[in-house]
Length: 120
Image (tube, rainbow, N blue to C red):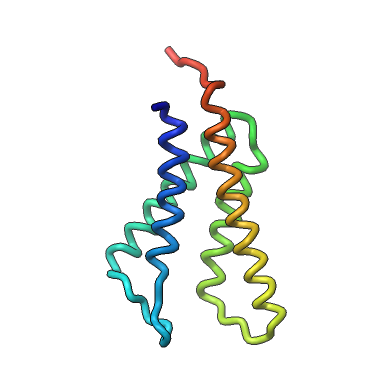
């Protein structure tokens, strides 16, 4: 299996881990261990950096910039409590764009697998 395929699969796995580690109860208290949340966040940041570099190198510069920006924007919505319903719609739109960007980036990395150049 190539490195790019492994990178794409790790990215998808980390996205699932992010969703699982964001679980809360009815009082909005985290129901997962703190270490899992920290691991998920740190590993995801590393993945975003590596994926952005790979996307940049294979010529998808717009997605290479959009991937970390949309992911960080989604992370910022966690710290904001929307009161008006318009903000709820905006936050949902940010999360949807981030998800689509994340999946599209993984797909681009997988698709570029056959276009790898051998470096000596």
